[in-house]
Image (cartoon, rainbow, N blue to C red; front, side):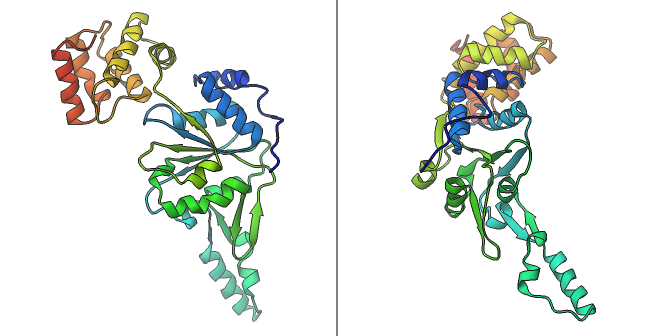
Length: 296
């Protein structure tokens, strides 16, 4: 198998970081290198990590940084080929049959199953995309889909092609940039993993959380951002069902500012906990930790 090693999109991982920075996504060296390699080798990129670490936003930010279209396929249980690949426009086909009958003309299956009667779904739309730059195809939360759907992706991920029985195999003239995300709610097939580059996105450290908060909550005092960044990290160390991700941290600090909080204290933290934790058990665990003085 021959892989391209020239990259018309990025010159280096450093440029990936710089371009993502322009759309307010702060990528560390590991993620920037993974994106650089995926675009250089024209391989799909599988991003795994806990919910809220920025897997989906990595793909959406990549499309924004490149100035290209984002095509999104949200996965769910029962997702079928018709939902992901294509569907025949039966209404147009039926209209064509009626017109041919009215004109006393014959119409063949080949006439009915022609490209003009094909309704694109995300995978086929990415294959047939004709923009100046390849699109970013986001296959979001692949772990929510069934095993059968994973098998459906093998040809697309490995060869940049889809097969339509009535038309044959359609190959991309220029492969889309494919980003798959998974929260590891189930194990993915080895065959899917082999077709992808892989990167695990960990929870960001306090310094990176602070850098993100400074951009996303510009009205927050620097001292509050610094304390909140440490606090969120300590909360993640608790035995929670759903530790807070970056999105929850942003919502929490935004809520604190809305409430007029300028300094983290046990009594100022409590009113906005509903933005940080999202289950009764996690809420009780966090309140208990505050009562015991286990959090800064």
